[in-house]
Image (cartoon, rainbow, N blue to C red; front, side):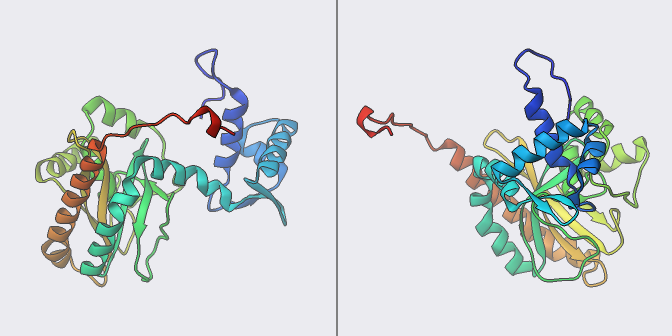
Amino acid sequence: MPREGTGPDFIEALARGLEVIAAFEPHRPSMTLAEVATATKLARPTARRILLTLEELGYVRTAERGYSLTPRVLELGVAYVRSMGLWDVARPHLEKLVGQTHESCSIAQLDGSDIVYVARVSVPKIVSLAVQIGTRFPALPTSLGKVLLAALAPDDLDAALAQPTRSGLVPRWRPGRAERDAELREVRARGWALTDEQLTLGIRSVAAPLRDGAGRVIASVNVNCHAAETPVDRLVGHHLPLLLQAAGDISADFARLQDVPHVEVPAASGDRA
């Protein structure tokens, strides 16, 4: 996050506050004032004022060894998902897909070189990586990420992958440019992506794009399975056709939602508080 903006309307204090929230990661759910200041490169008095402000607003609480986030922070991410209407559209289709495959299914969007999970219906299985709304992984070694990266123009692809991952993970598959481009060309040509333990051992998945009414790829949806339980033939032969159907249905419903006219009726003067 830039510490200084490019115009006179940039609010540095807001940027610093968001930076403090982002500093709390899975491996450090609580931090002391000194740790927050170090992580954000802020002066301790500044970090303290921000933490106290966030605490008063309900986004931070005092923890055993300093400070931790509260569940209210989830409202920031949920507001984004709800504003798109994507979850309301996708939920019944994801639930149906989970019922057909008996595997967890997720939707993700691209953020720099990472994917971020924005919707998920899971089944109770032991996997090597925990996934929840807001989880991020490096995009390239995931089926969800391959679909999203394949939809980018060459310059946009280079710009996205030039950004360092914020996931904290080192994937097993780290291809050179030629191998990467060949993989994304294949994804682009067939319309879906497969990953077979490229992110980490034990995880295998297929993904397909979700599109808006103009045909633009806005997200991706996948079926995820444990490599020891589900062979590639089963994943591609049985789960993939169901996934492609679900992706088409979600995209069609989302396009219809976008086409619904939205009219705002101004409140009468007497109705205003």
